[in-house]
Structure formats: structure tokens, C-alpha cells
Image (cartoon, rainbow, N blue to C red):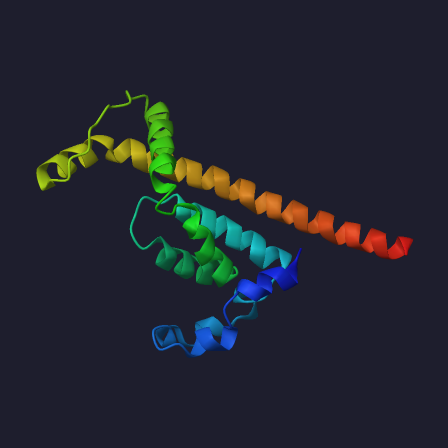
Length: 169
């Protein structure tokens, strides 16, 4: 994989270890697999990051960072992949997951006009909550597994191609 390109955009490992807001993590941030670009750590980062991107909750980046510690995946890639659902894409992505959730739960798709009052939002969210959650979890698992296996396959393919090109030279 293009390590040099990815490393240009990754934050410095020492800076993150010494950051004042991350000091509470202590020695957990010293695991090399959290920072190095290996096939396994990057593939796991795609698994964690894409799954967290589909979670309909605030602070997805924090959840991705904490899950990265447990799964031992590359933290910067996991956290950056959460931005799949950014302000431009969040509406179509979560509408898609809502429709998938209604299909999974066998409920009708509701035509809701969002009004930004407390009563309207609490009523609308209670009506679409379970289908949105079910669809988000389902899509998160499916797309994160696709990302995991795609990165693993592409990494292996790239390494084999590089070795083949070396042998030819």
C-alpha cells in the first residue's frame, strides 16, 4: 500500500502520546500496532472506522478511538474514517440506513417533515428510532466487513505485484 502517502497525513505519534487531552490513556497509547501501517492494523482500522461512521450517535470519533484501543487497530485511520458521515453525507446515509431498518423490521417508511421543536423531534425520533438503529447497525457491520476484506485483499495484491515487478527487473 502507499505508506508514504498515508504517513504524510498521519499525525506524529509522539505528539499524540504527549497531548494534554490524551494523557489519561497512559501506556495504552504505546502499543505499536496503534500507529504503524501494517496490513492487519489498517484493515482493522477500516473495520472500526466504517462501523463507527454508521452509528447514529454523537462523538463517533471518540467511540472509534476507544474501539481502536480494544481491537488494536491504527487509531488515526479509524478516527478519520468516521468522517464518511460528514455534514454533506449524513442525511443520505442515515436515510438509507433508516430505509434498510424498516425493511429489516418489516415496518412502513414514514414520511416525516422535520420540525425543530422539542415535541416534534421527540415524537419523530421515537417513530424512526428502532428502524434507524437496526439499519445503522446492519449497514455498519456489512460495510465494515467489506472494508476490512477489501483492504486486506488490496494490500496482499499490492505486495505480490511489487514482488513480481522486482523479480522481473
